[in-house]
Length: 416
Image (cartoon, rainbow, N blue to C red; front, top):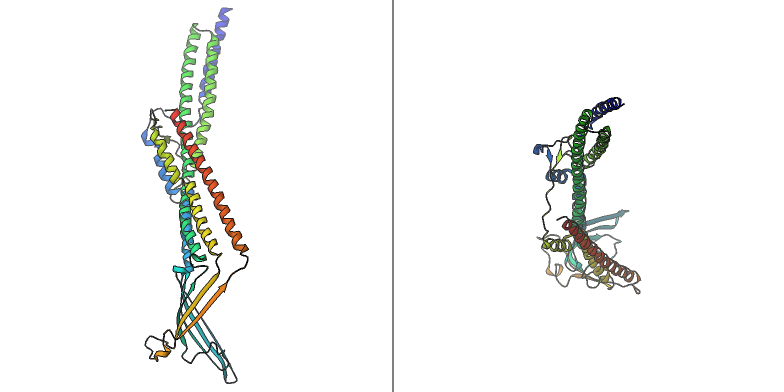
């Protein structure tokens, strides 16, 4: 009976050995070597270089500041000089009813919202309105239009330009925020790949140890030094480790795929992480973190955090908008003055009383004032409410950012 049992045990051990060898041939196609080959190391610095040069989202973020500067250029268009001219003539039955030529060059000025104007008018004919009639040579004019009420401190064009300039800073902060978000995701995926790689290494090592133990117990069982159940248990351990290795191999391959999402070449084509690439070794956390690091991080976040910078630039925009809306509460009072002359060129010889002097002028005053100011007061109140909302938002974001930094510092300090 003992001889039969021993023969059965030996057969069982040989069966398990053959099964173990056949299953071992199904090892996943994952390259993990015990020797650390620096030539195959894909470091975080290498990844950073590729991401910041070729990543589409990084390139897209760079367009934000360009778009903001284009908006500034568009706002500067309100201060572009404008040249306009018009001609009209009516001739009927050998009678020239009118022959009109009007031209004007208007140059908007930043100071006081004024407009400098240079013009030339020639209005002749039998039925021309005497109010605008000139002699056959026409009249030249040089003048200025100044708002003495609404628009003296700030007007629509200066309001638009100032806000568009602030939007450049807002766009740069938004650009930095997007870059930080991309880099955070990239670094996270890189260390997930590192974790999957190291986990596969450990499982591979555990499988190797379990296989050695199984072979040793099998030999002892054949010699009669160990019961067969020990070899069976060791074989089960080997199978469990092999299943763990297969699962870990899939996780490692998936981690490679996720990291490959961030790899692009200079032509905008996606790249794949090489199969033999390995991550760099993680740097050790200092034995004890310097508390001054936390103070430095908190100070930098208060002044340079992209979200807070965006909120502050938004506050500056609202301050300009509030000044403009307060300016609209004033009445419109525009003074328009022109000196006129019969001169048609700089070399013209004309009498002094027909040349530019304080006796030859056109003067006008424009006044307008809405009696209830409901639209203006409502818009001003809306801007004030937005400022209050922004102040609350700044307080909340500032607190959240500070607490997140302290919490992250505490997490790192716990492992130091």
